Image 1 (tube, rainbow, N blue to C red):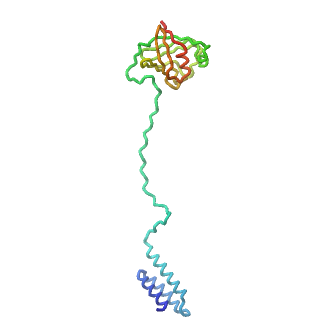
Image 2 (cartoon, helix red, strand yellow; image 1 turned 60 degrees about the vertical axis):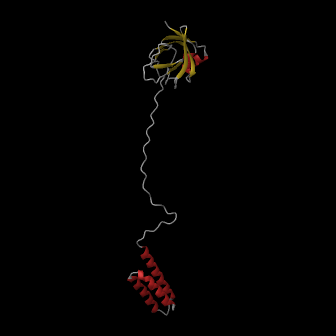
Image 3 (spheres, rainbow, N blue to C red; image 1 turned 180 degrees about the vertical axis):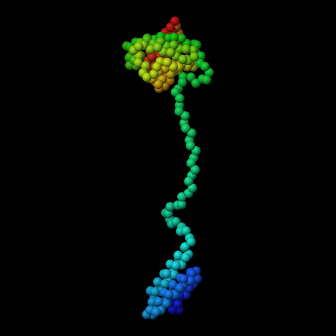
Amino acid sequence: MPLERRIRDELRLTGDAIEPNVERSLGAVEARARRGNGFSPSLLVLAAVVVVAVVALRLNGGLVPNPGPGAPAAPGPTAAPGPTAAPVPTASAPSPTSSPTPASYPEIAGTYVATLDAANAAVARDGVAGQWTLRLQPDGMALLSAPETFQPGAGSLTGITFALAGDRLRTDLFYNDFCTSIGTYTWARANGRLTLTPVDETCSVRRSLLSTSSWSAAP
C-alpha cells in the first residue's frame, strides 16, 4: 500500500473523534500537497502533527492536570485551635501557719529582751547591735522594738507572725525587707529565758538577731 494512502487511512481512523473542521483542515493541507510537484512527505508529516495536536487538545480540554512529582499538595483544612491553657496562679507569700483555725500559743507568749554586742562579728556585720524587745502574742502575732542604731530598710517592724509545731518555731520576721524565706528554729523556755536555735534559716540578719543570744523574759 502506498505510504500516502496508509497515512490517510490512519488519520481517518483517528479523526472519528475529531470535529469536521479538523477534517477540512486536513483536506486542505492534502489538496495543497497534490497541487505541488508530486508526493511531498514534509506536508504529510506536517498534517499528521496538526491532527495529533488537535486530538490531544480535544481529549485533554476538560481534564484537570494531575500534579507531577514534587508538586505542592492542595492545602488541607485548617486545624481548629486547641484549648487555651489555664493560667498558672501566682504563689502568695509564705506564711508560718496554714491552719484555718485561730492560733493559740500561750506556752511561749510573753515579752523578751536581748542585748546584742557589737563585738560579735555577725552582729556587727548585720547591723543588729543594741537592745531589742520581742513580744510574742498568743495569737501568733509578734511585735519588735529595735535600737535606734538599726536601719530597718524599706519595711517596718510590724505585721510579724510566727507559728509553733512542737519544739519548732517558724517566723516571717524581716520577710521582704532583709529576708526572702521563712526561718525555722527550735525553741526552749527555761528559767525565764527563751533560746532560739536555727534549723532552717537562710537569712543572716534574722539569724543574728534571734539566735546570737538568749532572750530574757521581761516582768
